[in-house]
Length: 260
View: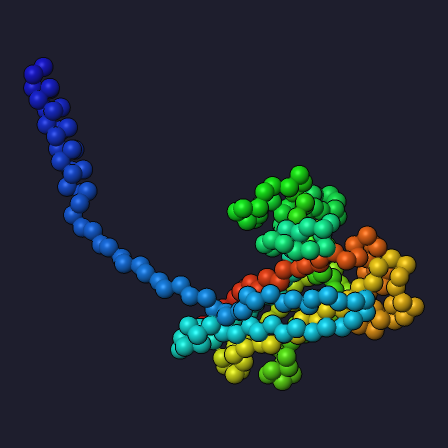
């Protein structure tokens, strides 16, 4: 009986010793580092059209360029990006006729099974701005539908998309996902295309029964696929501050070494 106990104890010690022997014979450390830089350089100065009047056509420019880090990298080649329009929120007074505080981006909230949506201005509400009685309390009337995005033609014949005024900036799919009406752009060192100069063109809408007789011709002359009635604003929106946020988002980057 004592012999069996001794053998059992010996076996236990041998197993424990085997585990200890396997646990720390060898170790390797792989040092992983990366320097993260932006691929694009985009000015964030506001595009302010000021006070405008129905059927005016006003232009602003937006410059999108390769960042200095991307341009100086010997392996980096091209950047693909999109220009996306999103709702704009802001602090106003005088029944929405005077902008008196900060502005920020609103988020579209869609429900599955319907094309309806709401805009949440509360999620990114800046510090110091009190909550509104409803999530869309700070929402500005949309200017997005009336903004065109036209690229330069460099390099000829151009490698960017365009979008005419009088369009829907987004639609809601039956499953509740958002279909964004994005404009695609591309910069490529291999094509000597280091920056894009976009023309952001505002075609000013009219209000209710106050539209000119040539309103329909004005709209379809710019966008033949547009229904002029869809872009007539309610008269109670006259005098108010309108807004739209343009988001420039990188969607892809390629390197010369990828082609090997």
